[in-house]
Image 1 (cartoon, one colour):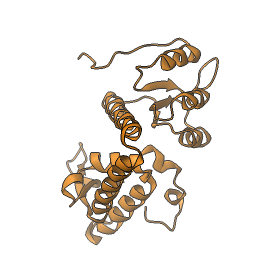
Image 2: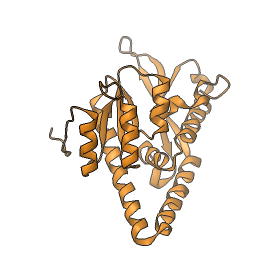
Image 3: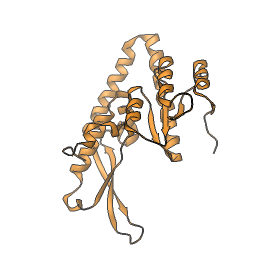
Image 4: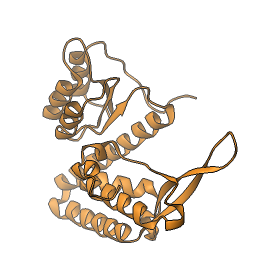
Length: 225
């Protein structure tokens, strides 16, 4: 299948920076461990040039410190090898889409001032709050292949908000508003509270955003999930 994007491979981080400064780059994919400088250092250099350009970091040796630094300097995603093709493609597509939105915002500011962008953000915040209040969990059974018995349930994010009824729009809004931690806590709480007492003996699976791993509440034994 042909990619809709032009892929430009760079042998060194400094070569990547030259391409970025020349323009027309919408997404950067970088390994964390590289010979000259680390992916974190490359991310810092990119931020000095373009605060909005999405950077996806990939690593085969995940570490809390590296993940924290990636979040601090605004990495779009922190992926662990091996990365499934579907996840990689969806990540790049979402990153490119959000970068286009960021560029549109900056153009709107240049043309109309902060008022137009602030109005758009208020509308997004309003819809996100509605989606958050209307969140509910659909539970999909997970069946053993050996004997076809149910051993767990996967919690699927849903909302009564018409404009954000599925996980995609809600996650995109949370990313843009910097509300991923709040969304993650809400999802985990809803999943824990919504599953019926009759199903407590089963294993419950809840999908996490990579940034959820940096949320202290996730590791708090007194918190939901």
